[in-house]
Every structure is written in structure tokens, then in C-alpha cells.
Length: 251
Length: 220
Image (cartoon, rainbow over all chains, first blue to last red):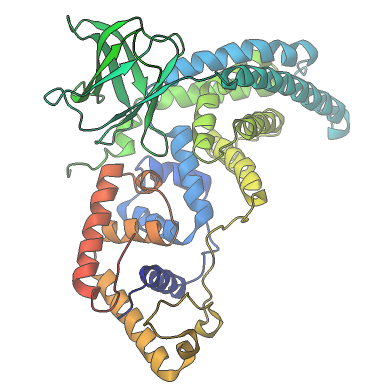
């Protein structure tokens, strides 16, 4: 009997390899979009799912199809607004320097159109570069290190019935949550612990380690707070207590 | 429908709707005609930029590289729209551009296009796995007895896997062979991550019941 845990993985990989090499006939992008939307007959869907086991390219393609044409994410509308704002910077760069082609009965030959196409590409490149530079500077500003920002960890299972109150100092801080139950999106409600009045709420998405990071650049004013972590439907999953106290020792 | 399974996309696609696709196709036609190119491309840009960034977010760790790739993708779309003939669907065309730019970047990364080591088809050419104390030594692996044992293990594994329900088997194969995350497997098989975890757990249990005498540990 083999005691090496890698043996099972190796044997399974070998078995899959023996079933056949990576297939050469790959379904088109359109088929994968149809697959993602559930528009294919059951037999073809099963065949495509099998194909994914052997084909890394198609696996990535189906991930892209889902991201591009799948369900809307919760914050997509706000992201679209951000995109529109970026476009307001980029658009004039493109349109101001690109002449719209005149519609003719006969299209001119490619030799005639080539300079226009090159000019358009150049302008687009310049515009994109300007946008990129702006985004980079914004990113750098966001990523600029802030000295000694305390981080407070909240692990799942610390429920109100067993109150574990964390103490923080006023000022910038970062709250990191490690919920027990995994969800795509969480809603964090910050309440006054005394009155239970909701002060603010935020959508949080877990990172690769299923941790949720909540940045408080301004911090919270002194007081006692109840932090409620809920799922999309509103069901509260975890509750934590946080006391912000100016006299507390530094975190 | 079983609990935890996702709603078929065909039922949900109504959210985006035909109107959505038509608006995009109209924007492309306007762009090609030269009628208000800025507004036409703006529609594509605002519609797809968040989604392109969503796709890249879990794959490209450097924010700078993500920005570069997003820029390259929209530049390619801008350049390509002029020559887009509408022979396939617009969505298929956009998907191919996004994927090609991503693949080109991915293939340049250390480890290359397939970071997972390939397993040689020929058993004699396969690299020897590290041997644990007490297990047969590397020198024995080529002996006729060892080959028989190995073949027996493969046959037992094949038989056990054949007995798994298709979804459990696919989840396990994608997890072990492709080394994909639970979330990615869920997307590929159109089921929730929780369902993937349940399938993996059940597959592990079933395989353990049948193979614990053959493989000391079954981990994935």
C-alpha cells in the first residue's frame, strides 16, 4: 500500500493522460458562451464539460466567458459609472483626433484606408496611455503606505452570546474578518451597540483566503459598535463587538 | 433542481436580454459607419471594462499588469472593430480578443502555458516520484513486479472513478489534474462553490471506501 499522498494524484493524472492527449478540436468561443448560458443540448453540454478536464485553454476560455457574459455582479453598476468617468477622459482623445470615415458607395482600397487606420490606432494608443498613467498615479496614491495603521482581526464564531469585545483606538484602522461560512458577497453593518441603530453598511467580497478587509481611513469615533456580517439575503452570519476608546493602549 | 445547484443560464439570460445584445450590435454598426464613434465605443467600453477587469482580477496579481492588459484589450477591440465583418457573433469575437490577450500574457509567465507538470504517457519515461521511507525504492520502480503492482493500482483507480457520479468525478478531476480552485470549478461546471465542495467531499469518501487499501492517503 502506498502511504505517499502524492501517489493518488499522480496515478489519477496518469489515468487521465492515458485516456487521451489534450484534444485538438476545441469548441469555439461562441460554443462556450452558449455552454455557460445553458443553451446547449444535454449531450453536448456533457461532452464540453469532459473537454474541460483535458484542456487548460478551454478552461480559461470558459472562465472568461462567464466573466464577460455571465451574471451581473452586485457592484457592476457602480463599476460602470467608474468606467464612464474614465471614458470621459479617454473619449475626447479618441474622437478629437480621429476623423470619422465618410460613407461611400464604394469603399476605398486598403492602401487608402491604411493611414487612417494607423492614425486611429496611434491616437487610441496615446489615449489609452494617458488613461493608464492617470490610473497608475491614482493607484499609487491609494497604495501609498500609511504608517502604523492597526489591523484588528475578527474570527468567525465570535457571536454575541459569547461576547468578545475588541478595543481599538480612534483613527485610521483596518478590520479583517474571517467568517466561518463562505459567501460570494457579505454585507457589513456597523451599528451603535447601545441603540442598535445602523450607522453604515458596506458590501465586502472575500479575497483568495476568504478574508474580508474593511478599511477605515478616518477610523470610528469613540464608542461601542456592533459589527454585523450578513449574507446577501440579509441573514446575519456573525456578530462582533468593537469598542473605540481614546485611552486604550496602542494597537 | 437540487439544492445548491445553479439556475440554468438560459433562464437568467433574460436579465441581459436581447435588447442588450442588440444595443451592442447597433453600437458596432454605428462605429463602422463612422457615426459618432466616440459614443459607440463608449458603450462597449463602459459595458465591458468592469467585466474584463473581473476576469483578470483573479489571474493577474499585479495591478499594473492588469491595467496594461485592459488597455491592450480595448485597443485591440478598437483596432479590430473596423475590420469586424459580423461573420460570427459579436460576443464570440469579443471573448476571443480578451482570451487571446490574456493567453499571450499567461504564456509569457514563468512556468509557461502549462505550469502543471506534464505526466509522460510512457511509464518508462515518467519521472520517479519521491519515495517515502518504507516504500519501494526508485530503483525497484522498473521491476516487473513493480510494474504489475502499478498497473493493478491504476485499474483499481479506474474502476473506482467509473463508479463516481459524473459531477463528482469532474469536480475531482478538475481539482487534481488541473489544480483548479473550488470557485473556478464552480464556474466551469455552472454550480456553486458550496456544491463543488460537497462533491469533492463525497468523492473523497467514496474513493477512500474503495481504495484505502491501495492508496494510503487520498487528498484533493
